Length: 419
Image (cartoon, rainbow, N blue to C red):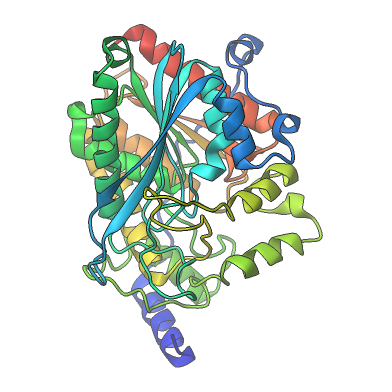
């Protein structure tokens, strides 16, 4: 996009969004506290366990306990060019499943190569695990053509991500139905960031008909942070208010539109910027330099075969279309429609998260609990880890361990209570 058009777009956004500040929600989440017994019952890999181990090495460790199944399906065609979209997915079916199954829904720019440590921890805890790569990410088809556009984070319509999830869930249910024992065990969903919005929209759409027994949402994206919170500049304030109001919600795809704020610098430029940081531990994703550095390596993973929608997992900055769709979808996910969610939700907020808005997470829980019985906690219970950044699942051990152990303990509690 040319510089004049970028400034014109910025001015339109600033003027449309100029309406003061988004409303604050006073009800804060309680601080997460985990007992030694909880961490003992739910072992989680220490950072040193897979230090300098690539995603395939971690996957091999998991395959000592589970059978891997690789597959794909055709999703909704791209809106821009009507090209077919191949959604890549993998299953890790536990040889001796004890607690049921967990379906993982990744965040923006992420893919299954980045979740191998989480997958391993879930399998060690007795779960079978299912995961798919969102369209435009991981080993699924890219939505923009051309070498310069292939690594852009893009989505035509956010609702396509929900449709893809539901198609994958249908396959998982069919697979598990073939085994009477597995079919009787609960199916949980664990999501991070953008994946949290995808899951919330699914849960609200399906209500009591969802196959999930419960949901664990790690730093879910119920409003992306599109400008620095502390900034008083009119454009930054306008951007924040524009996103908070649900953006434009454009009914058509505009992948060519981007601005300096949203187009990113390409995969290699973003990776170089991380490597050039004087203090990598100050990155807004995580305090863990080792885990974050390995994530960058895992993003270069390659895929070969008929189930690969794309040859590698490289994804970088977002297009304006993604930002517009993400803001609109997040607004819908945290809104009144969330009251239709009919399963228990565990939500974790990072006290140092600068990637998504914490107040929006509080609003989501308030919406879910709008119909709660007086005196009850409601279906959505939120927790806060003061020192956690956005990437909780790749944080240092003192943050990651209690977070994941708490989520698994929540799954245990739901399984004990039954439907």
